[in-house]
Length: 257
Image (cartoon, rainbow, N blue to C red):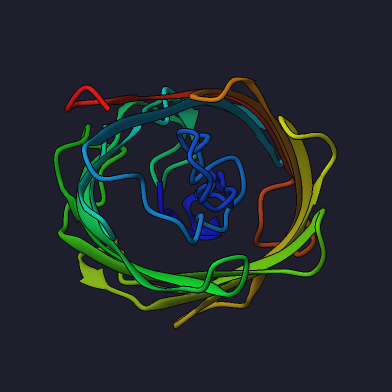
């Protein structure tokens, strides 16, 4: 996902649980539904698809975004490749008015930088967006981004996490820098069910800051299959009024693991 608040809808890039270090296969850990990415990478040889639908309301307008597909492929013990498929935006706000069509695709890599068993984790994500979308939706430029997600357990059931990001989107034919900071607290309700509350703030090169309050929950219907539900409200005039989304993610081994 890896899209900042200024994109009119705040699509999750999300926090997920760190992999289980027991002998059993690790449960799925996703980069949705929070804005904060997981600090974990997918296991080596695993294919993971994260998908969703988002409805956004802003100044009396409603838009729909789907399928929010992020493909993650483990290519090493601490490295994954990432591909963000073009979303279809229905009635998305644009300078020329409401537009519908496909957005841009993106590709990137995620690297685990540090992981202490049962302790602090940090990873780095580098991505590049390509101008493949519809005329009224695409940025019409090559848009790099960088994220630094981290997490740290507070107790057996509570985890703190956050992410520092820099986006360089194309706006009106030139690149503008947008910084982003997030912080969340996650509560493990049961082994398969957790919930979070999150703050996200964008700080663009031009214009005022954009603040968001976000909460959500995820439930693993099976260790490798997850459903999620999330919602958020804008805390500043430049942010969307509200949004609500649902998602489904799954993982399987490419090497028979």
